[in-house]
Amino acid sequence: MVGVPELDRIDFATFGLVIALLFVAYVVYPVHIFQVAVRFAIVMLFVCWTGYFFYKMVFDEVEFWE
Image (cartoon, rainbow, N blue to C red):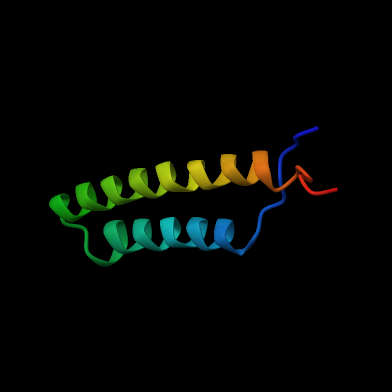
């Protein structure tokens, strides 16, 4: 049965990068065009991370060779 996998270092690195990008865009350098670019980067990160998470959910739990 396929279940939800545990979070690993790539998941935590992705979440940490999103938090860091938001901090830089809204606290350190609050310029509108930079905030839009950061939002776009976060959406792209979310798309890539979602693909990785679903891959991990489907294939890491299945034992093909046993």
